[in-house]
Image (cartoon, rainbow, N blue to C red; front, side, top):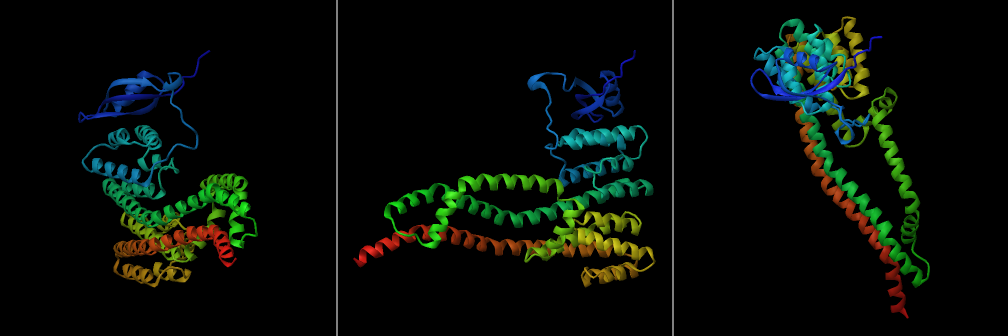
Length: 414
């Protein structure tokens, strides 16, 4: 009875056609097939070993669900590398092999290996990338497909890289604006918890020795201190549970229908979130149109990449309106959430036949606004958070010393 050959992972080291040292992992049914796959990619192996063949600490351990996926920066670097190599005349199969060897993220490396295997079997690059929706964003798939169809794959990859780099820069601006207040808030909460656990019980013992009735604010701190041994672990477990639930459900339609409208309406941050969503929409839309992707298909894709359900649902209505033959600017105006400047710029672009260029300029404008708002937000939140932290700790200190002040006043009056 024949036994089915089991596919395994093989770690390799070798040299690419340029003589550069490369390493990576591929899947093969045996050593012979692994060597054939490497040579087909132009790699001359000098070391080849099957992964997972060892025991104990030699085995590769992967915890399901905890392996880090590729970041947008990883994808930006990947597409920039592919664009450079394809533009220099390197075959797409060899370019994928070189990019795989230089990729640090394990998930992305395995994805590139499987994509290369499919391309080697005759599948188009866009069709192979489309098989991994959790790794490869839809905008990348459609731009690559447009480049394959039009014969300008290198330019479409450059557009993808530019788009990812702009999105990475945008996220970096937002993170830098939010890092300081989040850090200060965490420090304040830790300080409050430490005072309630370690300091307030010392004062509580002192107050019991003095006797008498405590002021309401002091009694509140004492009660909170007594509750901390029970409430603290409960809050911690609930917080961890919520974080896990949020990580798994934050992108579901039910959650986004509730959360995304709030993101656009909350004080201060609402305007910033709106500008971020508009920046993503205009830049992605410009990139898709510049690559030759049809308007209706572009609207469908950019809606999913805007990052906000409100924008996504609005663009679905815009798409239906455009399908009926109405101009894009008029369709955007009808939904009632897009700014007048964006509508006018799209209208001018439609009239001049340069809608992608006008959208790119609009995206640059909103990008500058996001940067300015992020800087202003940081400058405004820094003193506010310092005042908040000082007021909170000051309130607790005054509340703890109030009974002592009352005792001193009683002694002086005697």
